Length: 299
Image (cartoon, rainbow, N blue to C red):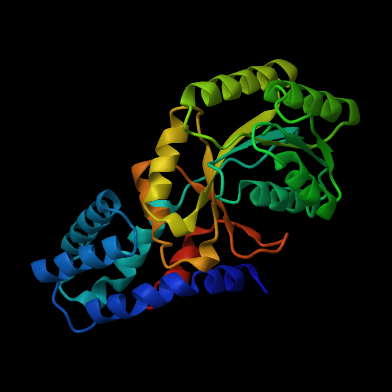
């Protein structure tokens, strides 16, 4: 199955939820206040979010005014392009050695995402080591070890309750000694005690900066697409703790709330970098804004 096919299939529930509404809106209608009010309702119902919906509509009104468009059918392509532009970010290509810190609350599929990332890089000929720095949650390291075996990559882990920064130090030391291309760091998912989590992540950041000052260092947060607007509040919470560079959006294949991509991108000004479109180790795809829009709009 090709890239677009996987994303299109993963977005089936979102498409089924929205396509009839969009089709009805953009057929035989004038671009009047009722049209824009209904369009806003459809966007919000699809978890696009109020702020993002309002921004998209204002841009559509302006584009239609500038191009003297008065009928809904004529506005389809303008609408599609505005949707694409609102979530299309230029992401700097990776350089190596690469360190990726992966954060996210428990239950969003963080460990699964790291396992899929490991396969993503090994499929591209890169060597990978996993740092099991979530030493708080019972069995977190053991679950990560299962994914390490699936992609045949090394894992560095300590006993439960150990210092997460010490795990990261050992993983970076191992990576330097072996010339490893990619270090993937799992982190604790609790947000109940932000101070502890902030301290842990602060120490990890210092270790990375000290031990591999010239590496390409990225921080990603994993979100569960099925949570809809709750995903936006999770981004906000973690962005206060770490400087988030991008989003890994899991479970896109199991939700009709794919519109949350817009809320995240517009409200938090962050790119979705990868999307999970299945349970398999290879079911992680680079996010493509045009493919995404094609996957949810049938107008």
